[in-house]
Amino acid sequence: MSEKRYLILAEGRSRDPHYGKTARGVIRYAPDPAVAVVDSTRPGESLDGVPVFATVQETLHLEPTTALVGVATQGGRFPPAWRELLRHCIEAGLDVENGLHEFLADDPELAELARRHDVELRDLRRPPTGLNVPTGENLTIPAKIALTVGSDCAIGKKTVALELDLEARRRGLKSVFVPTGQTGIAIAGWGIAVDAVVSDFLAGAAELLVVEGQRRGGELLFVEGQGSLVHPAYSGVTLGLIHGSAPHAFVLCHRAGATEIEGYPGAPLPSLSELVELHERIALPRRRACVACLALNTAHLSEEQARTAIAAAAEETGLPADDPVRFGGGPLLEAVLAAIHAQVPVQAADH
Image (tube, rainbow, N blue to C red; front, side, top):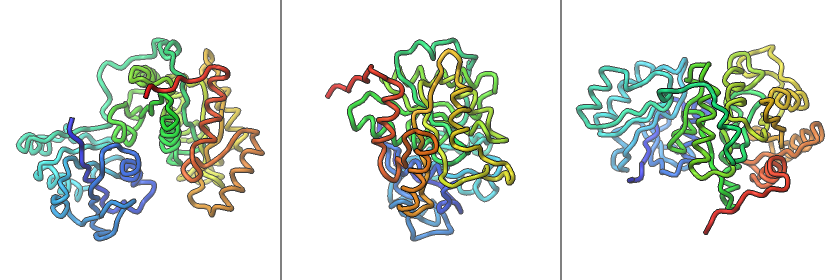
């Protein structure tokens, strides 16, 4: 299969670490290269080393093959100006990958244009057909499973899972990152966006994901978390993911210093100790997962402040804590392995 060369569409959002997180995640972690970013508000600049252009036409000399919608938009819909951007990509012969809730392949105009130019429209959030409730296979596969969970949304659950998977594979462990959202799917090339699944079948979709991760050779699975158990809007997806993926251990993610849910003023966050207890109590009764460690997002802090916050979190909970993006994933991986394997090591991959 030929290598993709991504043109990332980040109009007006390439500076935004929240709404532009798909762009940043694919640039940092996808095996296929990103060759250009389109954002007419920042031409001539760069995003994590990838040059930014004002128009699709200006990027074509870099020979992209696939345009990726690299942003989240209000309500998961395309603003009117984006339709023109998408048309330009299709007319240039680029496949389009889209992680928004609005499916491009269902748009008669864009679908016909894609047919005429012989390009593919891939809607990453479209659930597969035939989903159902869990069968119990999640409890019988031999893989060990770690799920990232969080005190809030958009604080780094995907990134922590990716960092721990990378660290495990650097050590020769048979580790697989299990994608549960549109950015993870774009990075890994497979997965199910669980937030687009009918709620009755969400746990069943999560079960399918861990079974597939094990089928892909994973003896250690790092499942990308979604939402938060204490979030007023997105707690449902978290609970379904917990019970469907049936993890042996949680990695609790938290933005250092945060005290309330972002976007919900007056909605306080429980303490870290309370969050640890909550997740361990709500785990699937047939597999009582423990919180192995805390992953803190300290990107907004100085190094000294970050180390102080990490030490305070470890002291409060009695658990290992670190920022795996800033300081490396080794210590947290050790904590996960200790928690879920006890005396049973993961086999190293053959070299």
